[in-house]
Image (cartoon, rainbow, N blue to C red; front, side, top):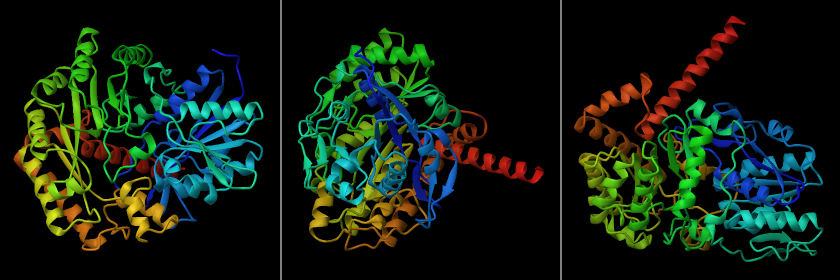
Length: 521
């Protein structure tokens, strides 16, 4: 390791949601773990202030944004936890729905640290770089795309009194106030990156509170086996963030990281945060075999982000089951062949359906993700998706979710819609993104379909959600006891629904305990 350099503090803002949101879950910030590891390998000291992790289950209202609330630390608490000797403060904005909250926090931090270099990164920043820097003048420099190398080079330039003109992936203000953006480069040797470094006690907070990305067992560890996605779906911002270069890690490196977590944390499960975890059958089979050979096949592992089906045939799925894959999410996105072509999904729906059914025959818990309300869609397209989702539920898929299309910055459809003048970039737009699919009780006005209103799409989604679970529980009554056992008698959640219900029960108990304490006091 190089000689120790100055301190870099990485800051994550609290979660924002509507006051009636039903679906918003705190997850560990693996981006900060990777950034910390990379910077430390180069001699920098790092400190993490996670406004979510450090106050799980705490909720407070946002007076400046009526109808919205934050989950986590207050802005003042976040500011107070940044060490005074910090030279560089980095902020992550992965989702555009967070932007008004992150911007408010950045301004509060700037007041306390007028001389620190403020850096912002993440998918929102990558998609709306110039907008973000003009909307928040407190930002000094942005990282566009992958963050490790760019953030390190920004720190090097800052420490040596240089500008950022030689930093690939950086956006900064020039002397005349214009914003310069230097094209970024993908990190090709991802297996050479240092393994993530998690702050002491960080993951334990999530395990104690029962928080995780997908289904939670006991000590679930986030991990990434690949970077990027080779596809170009029109509703997805990944091509803008990562390009279409897809890079798989070396299996030896991945197994080594898993072993380190077993030794240090005594983990019980792995949750793969990959954008598209399974694309190559041979790599997947080799990875599963290594889990067996290394005696790691007792660990549960899951793919909660959603993956493709091309490599998931009977042989591969049998190996997934053999190695304790306990939760598998498919992402067909639509049941309409016409829609699949227009959103450039590039899947064969029949093949994906057969893969889902085979996964169920193997005994794997399966979820499928669908979307309705794309700008071009007709009611016929939407009904095709609903019918397809109900078919999967009838055939045994444990969860089938339908979300309403979100026009996210950085996507092809976002560019198309803004070009048509159908989107206005302001706080109402950003906050509508965060409420669009987390608040099932809100008829969100941010709908980009000229044929169907937001109310109509919301009714379809709510109706489908109820019908889907009714079909599943009637058709497979053993799930009723499984859900009751897992929620009330300490079992591991088998589905996200069970996970959310367990979490809601814990929150209700905490509120009752707090009320009782106030009364007795």
